[in-house]
Length: 392
Image 1 (tube, helix red, strand yellow):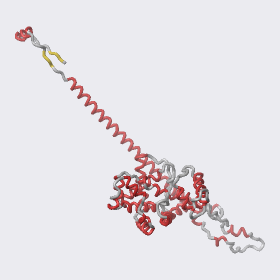
Image 2 (cartoon, rainbow, N blue to C red; image 1 turned 90 degrees about the horizontal axis):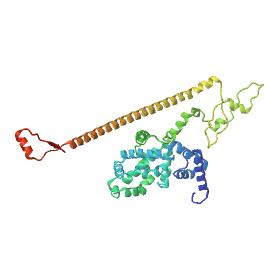
Image 3 (tube, rainbow, N blue to C red; image 1 turned 180 degrees about the horizontal axis):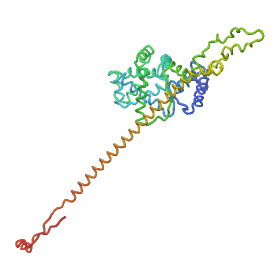
Image 4 (cartoon, one colour; image 1 turned 30 degrees about the horizontal axis):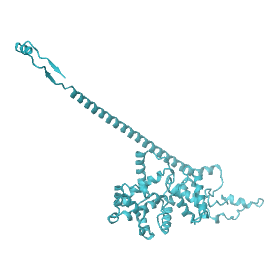
């Protein structure tokens, strides 16, 4: 599909990636998006593949393809912490040779294993990924590492950093087959809650060591169900506006006075329906009833206002937590400054003591008596003479 230079596959791929740079200019183009867009193009038209790529970048993997790749670095730390729970032997080996996760898991995560696994396994992993979210990518990576570095026999051939990296580049083929990989991925105890908890821990460490993130992506959603719930929460009218095509048929007209004739178009409007189907590629405008009188409108606005109140409460809590975090950071800075001042004073005192000691040693004098003479000897015998002291 993409082999012919200038063929339809390459043209569609170029159009999708170019469109994304226009749609998200703050992120721009990232090379790892090409394999993801290519897999999507194999299963759907170019426009649908584009909007699916947007959802992956916004909902499933936010911040992965932004400048600086901070999100993938943060997920690398989360992955390394999870590896310590799942396979301590592989964790100790990688830590011993100082092999950071970013060196081997970047292509796995950013390309969603499309350049790593066999094609049949890629399709199965992608199905699970769309359904359950990013935890599937974490699980697949952990299973692969456990098969590659998870025993003493497997580590015998990895006596250094170079040998370990070579082994991670050429993973064992048997562990990538779907009949072996997928059951282990499904049974691995890595949940959404565990990933979120570890994410908060690593984010706090990041802020302490490196400061704030330069790019702040949107909240990551774990799977199709969370995305649908978020969509309904942001737009509550969608929950009551799902209409089948049968409901759009013209109903039987209600009884009307003999003198008045009701036009057929008003029948649908009187039932509170709009007979306009949304576009399949931009299904954002729900089918909903027309505007009603003020009283009914107020009653229908109660639910959105409650949702807004909850959103405000969450926003206040988040702002409060950020303020508390900033206060803690200020206190830590003050404590560091105090400790620094104490250390400087201690060093200054030690320096002054050493200088005083050296001065005392320099002031030690040596006394030397003058050479004896007959005059002085007679003076000493008579007791009238005095000795002269000379100091150096």
